[in-house]
Image (cartoon, rainbow, N blue to C red; front, side):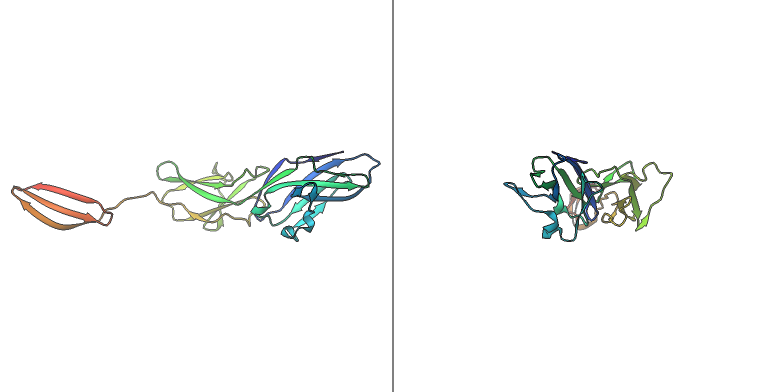
Length: 227
C-alpha cells in the first residue's frame, strides 16, 4: 500500500482556493470504506479536516477515480500553512500516516520600493514563498490595470517607475485579480532643506560673528572679515 502526493509543497495566495491531490494503491482484496485528510496527529490519532471547526465550510473532498483524492480548501488563511496528509481505511487496515504529505504555505502580496537608476524606483511584488505554477503578475496604477505590452517588465513581479511619481501602485496575479496587494506610493528621492535664523551678532575687532540655528538642529558659525 502506498500514498503519493502530486506536490511536496505548495505556495498559495491568502484568500484563494487550493487543491492538494494524491494517488494511493492497495491490494485488490482491500475494500476502502473511508477516506479523509488531516493536518494534526498525535500518537496515531488524527482529526478529519471536514470535522474541524477551523475549516468549517471551507473544506471539500473530491476524486476522479477509486485511487485518487483531492483536498480543496477555500478562502485560505495564513494559519492554514502546515503539512496535510491523506488517510484511507479498509476492512483490514488504516493507511497514510507514515508517508510525507504536502506542505502548504499561504502568503499575501506586498509591494516593496527600492531605488533604481537615477530618477527611478523599482517596485517588486513580493511574497513570503514562491507561488506555485509561476503565475503572471498584474500591476495597477491608481486602481486601474496597467497594460503596457511594449514593456519588458510588465507581467513580471517588478516594475520600474519614475521616482517623482505621485501615483499609487498595487499588484495581483492572473486568475486572482481580486486579491490585490495594499497600494503604495513610490516615494520621492529624499531631500534636505535647512531653514536658518540669525539669533545674534557680535562684533570682534575686524570680524563679525554670526550665530545661526535651524529647525533641523544644525548650527552654523560664520566669520566674515570686516573691511
